[in-house]
Every structure is written in C-alpha cells, then in structure tokens.
Length: 322
Image 1: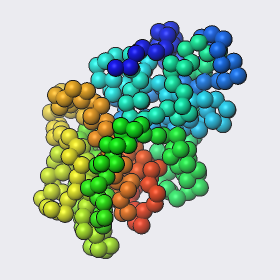
Image 2: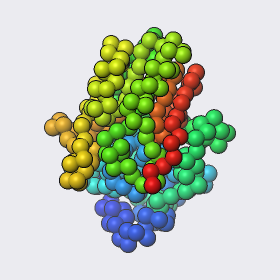
Image 3: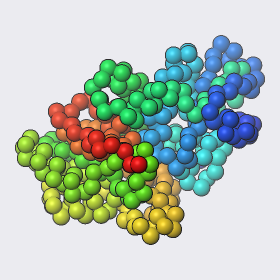
Image 4: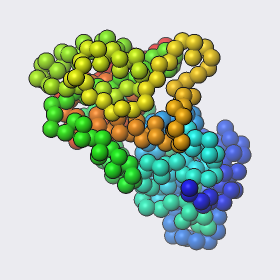
C-alpha cells in the first residue's frame, strides 16, 4: 500500500467549483521548495470509468504540452476518481503507478511543499486530442511525432514490463495476425459520436482473407467479449491464440439495468488492477504482431502508438454512431 503522500488540500481544491476547474488549468503553491521548477499535475478526465489506454492517450497530450512549456509533468490518479482505485478511494494511492512510471521521474511525494504547481485542466491540446481520435492516417507526420512522445514518456513499470514480456511469448516465432475486437457495452450501447465497430462475423471474414493472403498461421485475438471469443474459437480452433484475459457476456438486459463493462467484477482481490494489467498485455501483444486488423478505438490508437511497424494493417473506418 502506498502512503498518502500529498496534502489533502490538493484534493479539496480539485473538488471546489468542479465544472469550472476541470476546464481550466490552475496555478497554486504549497510552499517554497523547488523555486526553479514548475510541476504540472495531470489527472482530470471526463469520465472516471475511462480505460487505462484512453487515459494514457489523453495524458500524453498533456505531457507534450507540459514539455513545450518547460513544466515537469506528473500524473495523478490518486486525487481523482478512476476505476483502478477499485474502492480504495481518492487520496490514498496513485493508480497510475500500478502500471506505469512517472514521465519525468518526479512523483506527488516530491512536490508537497513546492512553490510552482499547475493543476492541468481537462484539455491541454483539444486540437491534438481531436486529431488522435478522428485521424485515420497513422503514417502522417503529426501522428509519428506524437508517437515519439508517447513511446518516450508512457513507460511501463517493472512489474508491468515483466508481465507483458511473459505474455508476449505466446506469439514468439509465429506468423500471427493480431485482431482487436471491441464488443460488450460498446456494441450494444452504440455511444453517440463514437466510431462504429465491425461485428464479429465481418471481422472473421476479414481475418480469413488476410491470413490466406499473407500465408499466416495463427490469429491473436484481443477482446473483452466472450461471445466474440466463442465465434472466433469455433472458426479458427487451434489457430487461435489468446491472452486468457477475463471476458464477459453483456446482454441488452444488463444495459437496461444500467450495468456496463466497468461494473463487472470477477471476485479477485484488486480485480480492477488485474483487469487493467490483462488489458495492457492484450494491447501490447497486438503492437508486437506484424499484421493487424481492428475497429477504431482507444485500443487501436494505442497499438499504433506502441508498434514498431506493421507489414500490413487494416483499421475499419465505418463512421460514427449517430
């Protein structure tokens, strides 16, 4: 357990006039230390249930902005609600550090008496965030420049590195097509203005076509949806490689009852941490395949930011849900 390492007043400050706060950055001071440094605290998010890579993408735009201003970015998933705290509550542990290192080596404990602190607003660069979520050209110069920032400053901690390196062995020395299939509440709820996802059968046909064209032996499937997994398993049998991540079957009744993907719990201690780790591994393994297909999601953006390059990639561009 991490100790509570930053004064409670930063949490209280963040909660005052909440709507105004999350849309504007604020400069505050906690003392006289580090007078020549300006620390930039990144933590706000539109939804407390955002997944870890959706957060990483958003935080990366803040990191890029902070560096352009000669600020030192620190990611704070301690004083803001997020699913990975898993009931622990705010102000106790920094959930970012469950999975990642801090971008520039400084953490919250090192700034508790610092003179120059900027609390990030919701958007550091709305233009860049819009570009990332609506751009389909992953070879554009702007995307490649942002990719350098992501790869340099979004750094897995040692526990995460060891976990994903072990999981990566399932595709070692194999000719593998990586497939990202988003399902569950995304498919059922069809969130307005979000990219439309291909259905399982469309993905299966594209997978068969791609494997035949490039003479591939295996398909690695990353999905949180048990129904999609079952369909792929029936089609590809022993050619299907997977990460043993926990998957669910979400029904229309679940949505009617207000139950979403984030609401499921598998009864493990620190369940959200383990789900986050499994998801990180799934997306990382996709980035290490040489061939890739998938719908356009935060996961796909993250794959493109982490990959060293694909021999073939296909990302569905089906428009957005109305």
